[in-house]
Amino acid sequence: MKKSLKIIIPVLAVLLVGVIVFDVTLVQNKKSEAEEATTKEVVTTTSLEDKYTDPVELQARKIIENMTLFEKVDQMLLYYIPKEEPLSKMERWQFGGYILFSRNFENSTPEETRQEIAEYQKVAKIPAFMAVDEEGGGVNRVSQYSQYRSEPFKSGIRLYQSGGWQAVMDDARDKSEFMTDLGINTVLAPVADVPYSRSDYIYGRAFSTDPNAVSEYITNVVTTMNENNFLSCVKHFPGYGNNSNTHTNSSVDERSWESFEERDLLPFKAAVEADVPFIMVSHNIIDDFDKSVPASLSKKLHNYIREDMGFEGIIVCDGLGMSGVREYVGGDKGEVAVQAIMAGNDMICATDVGIQARAIAAAVENGRIKLSQIEDSVARILMIKIKYGLIAEGDIPNEGMIGDDSDKTTTAKAEIEEDTAYENKEDINDY
Image 1 (cartoon, rainbow, N blue to C red):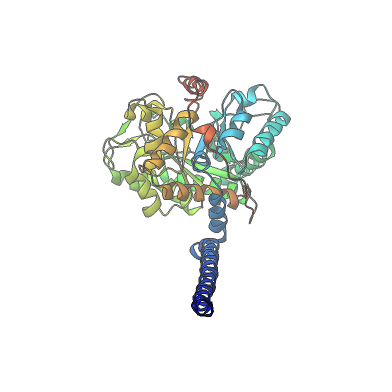
Image 2 (image 1 turned 45 degrees about the vertical axis):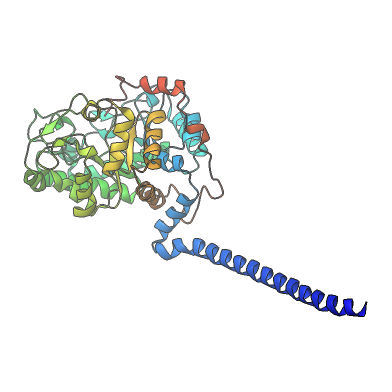
């Protein structure tokens, strides 16, 4: 018995030591794992601060952290406001913005418009652009109706002829205040195109055939609207000149690129210097710069805007329902949206959310479009929203509100029918 105890006791001691060593090791491992997790958490928390020193971009990137893929893609849609259920569609899709049309004002009052826009903004997790074409002269969506103004906004050239640059600036201030009061925060104007003669398609909407005069006009309008915290959008880059209407057909501009640099680009460069928030790109094919490719789908041209012109704001393409761009992709609504994003547009004037948003998201998931490109575009969109006060400084409006994309991944028959209903309607050719 004593002999057995002599054997058992050492064995038990060895086992006890082993258990103690195992427990200590386990505790140390768990401690190490916890420390490693804490370190990772600190890195995740501080990496944005380390990477983005600009407080506005840092705020934008923090907002992006809380967004699903579809929420990022949908921020890139400046969507033609649907005729049916615009409120529920904004709540579901979380568009970057709505474009309103004449039909939204014709039978409404200013108070009704204020209320409707306030409702759209209420359901938007991130405040939306509320945009309208109000160029003055022949293109007025709101002021043409007497319940809104006693007389419509005048064209830039008529203002100048009656009162010089002061009249132009007074009008830009008046327009900014008028639109802001209604809840509209963005105007798809001024027109920066430089036509050659009265016979040119864009002449009736342009300020002058003199590029220097147009440049001064653009500077005065953009600067005044910026001073009034109102967003402007110069169009139609790189300039229509004497080109034909891309709403109804494909249009090839055969002028030399040098002629653009000497003439058409001057007003757009003036707009960049004046810190314009939006540049809209046309569907014109500039054959000498990027042969056979519409400007709106030309990566080479978008690189020129970013790198050569130094533009840091939002690039948006003209309406994707227009024939001048749809014909290029054989009428494929999803493909035209994908190619527009691949080219470098931050936002697209979209007509077919059920098709286009899903096509872009699919292109990200299959690697055709890099997620980093999407996020860079969304960052620019959010930075403009912060800069112009749509998002309060330092605010993360969607913090802790990670969405659910499950209801957006399958195209419903009703959405296909709704999208098709836009074809050949006035909204497609409304600007």
